[in-house]
Amino acid sequence: MIEIRNITKVYGERRAVDGVSFSVSKGEILGFLGPNGAGKTTTMRILTGFVPPTSGSARVAGFDVQDDPIEVKKRIGYLPEHPPLYHEMLVRPFLDFVATIRGVPRAQIKARVDRALERCGLTPVAGRLIGLLSKGYQQRVGLAQAILHEPDVLILDEPTVGLDPSQIREIRDLIRSFSGEHTVILSTHILAEVTMTCSRVLIINEGRIAADETLEALAARGSRTRQVAVRLARAKDGVEAEFRAITGVTSVTRSDGKPGAYIIEIDGDRDPSEEIAARAVGQGWGLVEMRPITLSLEEIFIRIIRGEAA
Amino acid sequence: MRNTLAIAWREIRTYFSSPLAYVVIGVFLALNGYIFWVSLWRFSEICLRYGNSPYIFQQLNVNDMVIRPMFGSMGIIFLLMIPVVTMRLLAEERRSGTAELLFTCPVTSGQVVFGKYLGAAFLLMVMIGVTLSYPLLILNSGAHPDMKPTLVGYFGVFLMGLSFLGIGLLISSLTDNQIVAAVGAFGAFLMLWVINWVADSATVTLAGVMNLLTAGLWERLHFGLGGPTLGDLLNRISIFEHFQDFRKGLLDSQHVVFYASVIFLSLFLTQRVVESRRWR
Image 1 (cartoon, rainbow over the protein chains, first blue to last red):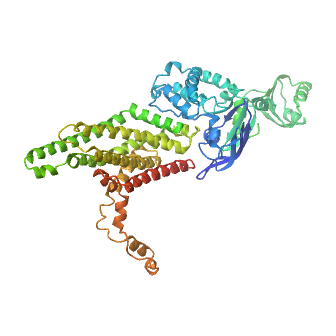
Image 2: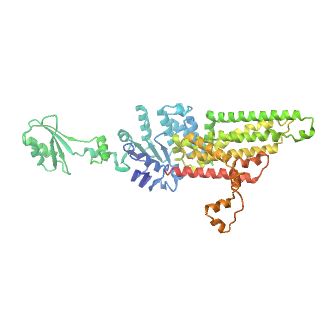
């Protein structure tokens, strides 16, 4: 559905996006994750045809963003970071206007606007002035504006910013309801948002893609054991050397705080946990605790952003 | 076309749902009404004074003494009012971020520019249209204004206003700041107004200027040093100069072509500016 090839965007001296390539298939919900200023918004703006890329190409539903901008824009619903609203307009006339310029046939406008109002929970405020609505409602008007024409591709730039927890939940449910029919790209810097709504994660940092995998694969990175914590009741002097002799163990450090606690770093495909246990028991050190240290998604994310192996 | 009209209609709604349209139209009508009333009062005074000398009375004409000054004042009020009408058109769109909505919708930048222009043109039409009631009001009085030259004058005022709107829109596309757009437009209008004030003393010919620029090469190539003067050129590009014949009730196609060219050129440049700003 979406195919981005080697896109670069240079603003003056700064490379906002630097050689990004990825593709999204129909019905997928892609989480676009990265710290502030990583290039998420710029990538999305290129995809929607708002800014042209310095080099590279983007295609939506087979149409090139540069060559057939109108065909691409017909298929996209876009909610920018700051919802683009005319504050002096009422909610319904605003949505009527957007439906018209999005190319919704005149006869269907009323039905589509009604549906979008209902899906976004805006029916009670349809006659209110947009400028007087709360931030949460304004965000919903922005979302309603993006889904009005039932686009194939929905691009949402930080859709839950500024909302209260129950509103965030409603918006997430709404986004989830688009999976299957619509292709969704959702940018955020909140990790929890990705785990709750997306099937695939793309982590972008300093304009480059740092990771592109399914949520399960990302989580699996963390459960691959790299460290084992061990606590012994009767630790002796030779403990470190003894553990280091096991193949697959790279280093053993005494962990601070508790007496007899060690952190064993392991490397390679072989999992030496069983051997570590046998050695400890065989030497009579009194093994009281042994657990693999796994990484949470949060820690994986931070490690990827820092460019460390996770 | 549907997109253009939708954008124009939204623009009109915005004008008329804010105080802006009412203030602009109200001030325009108040000033014009005052000037019209004063001219009419003076006219009737003169008519009374010369009522018993038929020769002078024959020369008195309501078109010359009441309606023509009204058109002149409209031009000056445009100078101050049109920047207020055009300043927010594109500048505000950029500042508030709604440009991101318009330019990610399946509409072309030409449709956006033309739609906005039509919206502003509608406001201008309302503004001028209401003042038509002034001459109509005295149509059945003893003054007997001649409606044909009056309507030609209205056509000229409308064309001049449309040219100002085009230039104002162009300046609004260059900035994100409404005040900058308004001051810039005001400056441009004023410049186009005063540009021919020196026309009478600018007697140097254009060929002479070319000769100076090419360090005498022009003359040596026997292109000649005669022809139109710089002053003629300045008269040609002065927006008010082209309005003078309309004021007198003369419909001359060269002036219509001039205004049409100004409108076309400014809209074309606006579209180019909007398009080029995406690349920054």
